[in-house]
Length: 465
Image (tube, rainbow, N blue to C red):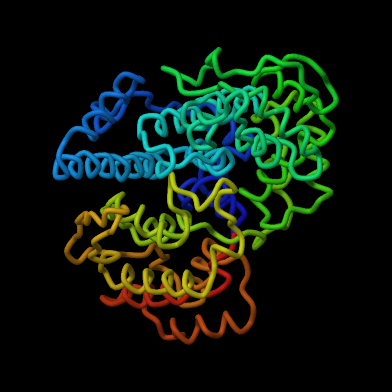
């Protein structure tokens, strides 16, 4: 596979940026990606979602006092907003000409997990997502502070129930285990004392705030330091620890390049990250510019978003609805705003179970034959409310190929942008599909190349970047 195609997929979701990476070089392409602007306007579907504690109290009261039919309508509206939230984000992913920003937002989304199912206030989940976007290339330490004090996170990890004399350890535990240091770099006592420092940190207007009747102002010992600490103090102490850079650099390497990052690279980039005072942008520049020249193709399984968006882009399909994309990737185990647990999506081999592989093959068959993904009705919530998905008639599909070439040059062209490697057996299979007497200017040439493309998408080599 062409190196620029590999990195277009790694730093985005399709092959569209390959020519730009080749023209600009990886360093300048990254600079443009870091400078990319984004819309900060509140989506209209959230206009009437509760945004203050008073709004939330009023909504809860209306659910409580209304009859069952009205309660159902209120709940259905909230569910509908949750679906529109997914569509809103997928629209950003699809239409950003420099999609590294959204790829990084998705990384943070899977690191600082906070789901709509648990939070139950779509506006807070939207705020959480925007916080990730605004700080995607910023400082890891400062982002951690902001996330811990977000309404979505204190709700998701039950810190609203963490009070003096009635401690809940969830946020304290995940702050250490999943967000910063990783298992083995703290003690149970640190978790317990961290929970005391976080006691009383509950819901606020724009961010979480301490409530003095519930907070614990006693002296604690945390990671070897003693004092009367609060959330920011805990994070300051965490970021002084020797192990702090390695969990996040391993996850970044895993997200973009290697399903199993070499430990030597984790330490190498982690040490650099510490020297950069946990600034994300220089870390990404170093990783991507140093990994770009290496022969590391085929080291990562495509996630469902990359798989589907690349497929649609290659076939020049623009009218797959965002809701259908959200439904497809949910079936593939990548449900936006609803990871299975606080650890997030596992990625790697979990993206390629036998069931997921079959779904991918069926999807390729449908799209290559000019049919949309499917007519689907989604059961989206515990109340079994059914939501009709938009569908389309037969769609026109085509595949780009050199009409002046022969079968071997066209096979080479497709393989160069789609397959990380081609062995002798695979080459023979492709030549069996697109035979030596193939006429690229014939009326049915596109259909023949589509058959080849469909075959390629079903190979193990196509699943890797």
